[in-house]
Length: 426
Image (tube, rainbow, N blue to C red; front, side):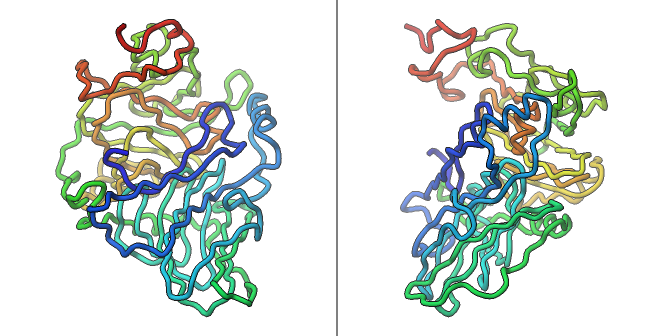
């Protein structure tokens, strides 16, 4: 991986296959000669956390195709296992890295370990200031790394994961198991937050970039002064829900994404007309009702833009932008306006690829458009994504240089209106 380190996960993104599992962790390590801002841990564990339905993915898809909303999940899993179904071994006095990812479909989760503090050291490829927490909110699609030290008497300790912002709280457990432990985990499960939004917002704001640490390259992460660059465009994106043809749909700026008959990148690369239209979605909320379209927003290569995610709804959203990391410069309750910029963090905001937007709130990000292509911007609430809560950002340049964009691989599968075309000149 070029110019990338950190903790991520993969999953099937077509139809509703994510609900069937098929996901796994991705660890991208720093190159050997590049310093990491903490000592090598004794071991490195990936914990994939997520809500789960007993119904299979085809049954869940059928519910959505029928115009209905998904029911509440049946449980929460850790690495595919239910309550007390897995454990992680540690030795007293040693330090371990846990990579935590929320791979679920619907709910934010809170993670905690009985009797142990967790020191956050990395969030989606950014080394952070090392602050310790007793519990952590991890929203849909997000990953982070923590260090824990096995500094308690040898025994088993509960690992607890529970849903956030839900009336009914789902909880699951695993074990942190000390070597030579002969004592089972005991006592009440460590408590965590449930519906408190301000608690989560305060924690999110506490995450900061370690400016002196190296990232994927030896130069410090703080050497790119994003806060000193003038933005060239402001894009405001508001979530919305409504009925189209008597069926539930979701959208951005009133547009509910309708998948075309040809993959977006193929249509863009081969310049196939009639698949999509740049500008089919407004760059600000329209206030109108939900309607279907293949929504594509055009932006210029090498521009530096501001995106405001606006959430007028009563649920938390989580957004992912493919192909990019961005700086989360601000988030707060209420309606965003130009004065909101006065509270932006223009010095040490975390650069990441997925960000939450709290209910009745806004989140602001800065993005350096250095990656040409057709990029998916989507909700990580997977039912909403499936029912149109997504769009594409087309980062355009008229240059055909391989420095700006690699050609489509020779073995790419060409389908839809791209079928029969050649990936490279013969």
